[in-house]
Image 1 (spheres, rainbow, N blue to C red):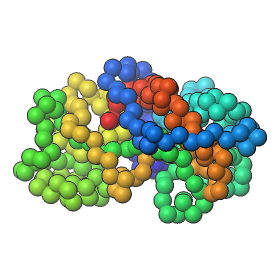
Image 2: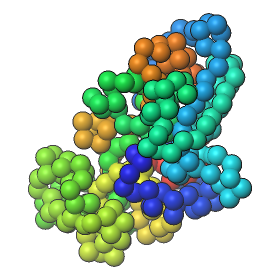
Image 3: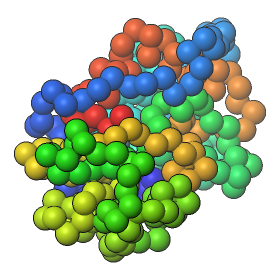
Amino acid sequence: MNGGGLVLLQVATLALLLATPAFAQTLPYHSDPSAREVLPSANAVPAIRFLTTADFPPFNFRDSSGELIGFNVDLAKRICAEVNVACTIQAWPWEQATNALSDSQGDALIAGLAMSDETGASFDFSSTYLALPGRFVTRAPDIGIFDASTLTGKKVAVRGGSTHETFLKRYLPEASIVPFDSEIEGLVAMRDGDADSFFGDAMRASFWLNENLDCCGFAGDPYFRPQLFGEGLAVAVPAGKDAIRHAIDWALVRLKDNGALDELYLRWFPVGFY
């Protein structure tokens, strides 16, 4: 998560904070809604020390006054409040954050650490709290008539070499793929009529749409392909720290059920990407 596309996220942050939530949708359930973790006792989890970074807007970053804010920051606070434990949130440079968690300088890392075989050797992960689907974007007049099953001869803009290009080649081979160096270039090409649609990361596309709602919008359904697009966002804890992980999972179910998770999503993502 803390890699390519960071500039896009930073540029979009101000627009996100000023926009209205009129185009957002509530979050779907990303975990089994029937699952109910047993909340560990206060003795097992007296506090949660969250670690994050300060360079990944709108998830975790510093505002003009230097205060640490963002979706992840608000979520960490809500988790602590739900579990009713003391809470601290400390920002680390990205390249040091996982080492800090391994060295017991925190109890949980909420900073978009990818779930992989490598990270899974050192950390356990909470339930996914934000999945990251792929989606098509088209010009406004085409939204209602878009059909992903009829892409023969249609130009689809995509970031070259991305997993979204892999998805198109694997599942929609009839599309005429037009690769671009960046997602922004692909979106602009679609907007200007040089491509019929764009396919890419829905979250990043939502930031661009936030400033281009007069021309374009999401079309068709979201595509959830964890093996290509990743499992989504989850909280990392040191391997074996089950009490902390269970408390976080318990809180996430509660926050979804009482609407708080949807509230945070609507606040930080005015153009919903589901």
